[in-house]
Length: 378
Image (cartoon, rainbow, N blue to C red; front, side, top):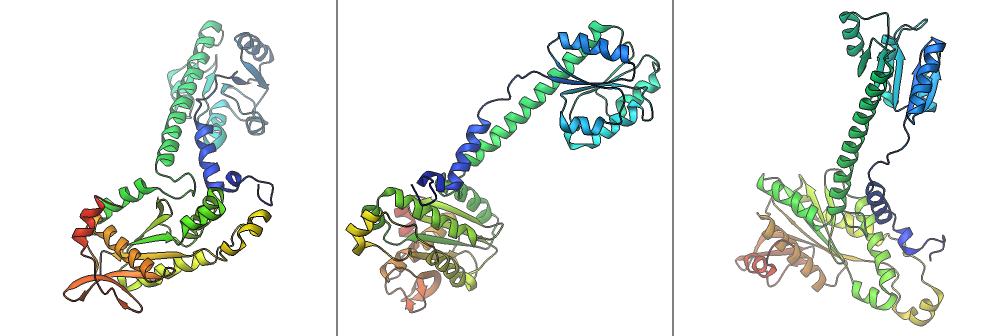
């Protein structure tokens, strides 16, 4: 448990929120008791409707006119409104239009009731004002009960449809997200890369790998390792532009897809991510770990970064692009870690390879061989 009293899992807010969103959306809407609001200035009819519908098991609210209608629907949102057409001051047609303009009642079923306006023109006006039904014989109570039941059934169907859509969106988000860091996952990155490359878009693939991560896990345990992954993911997200994609690509490796960028800015972008990780404030270690393993404790987390691009001396194809970024990352590791290496088609001995500030890779990697060895995008 951390200093704030939270468990390591609770400190990983993106993962917790993602899990809770799936849990919340996993159950369909409950078949609860429905509330009906009756707005009628005729006291006798108002009481009759309340009694009849109350016997059907509905919760009933009543109003004698429309003066308090807005406040009522906001305080106690109804599942259906039974609205008299002939009301003092503001008639039912106008109130129906007002309800349709409110977010709270935009989709709430409204049944207009009247015994006076039985002509076709009035019925058309009522339906066009936003009513779901128009009843001209409110004394036929069996018919009124049936119409209410139908509208509430339709509302229930809409709620189920909305739930199904939300469930599908939630599951899609979960399938394309990394539960630990809250970033996109490998599948999401691959699905973004393929159409972008097919369309000839200029982009950079930035591979970021945490240095000595196995040593961190072996020394401080996997709980601390998970916290480090979460902090690195947060640092990467903090400097990723809208429209770009940051993903945990596997283990301690992250991939950022930078759209509309060429190799001219590759090193600067890579350094932005490297420095963001270096600024991470590490979580406090338990006292027993500090005492026993103080010599192994690292003062900061560092990453090695490999960058490859598709424009301005870059490469083409997802498999080759990621192989080039991986070759640059491998060179960064060999060169001492905590650095950025950019792959370009700089010719060295007749072949291309990763380059860095201090020079070019002495034995450049042949991308076709490396891509074949990888067996696909990675």
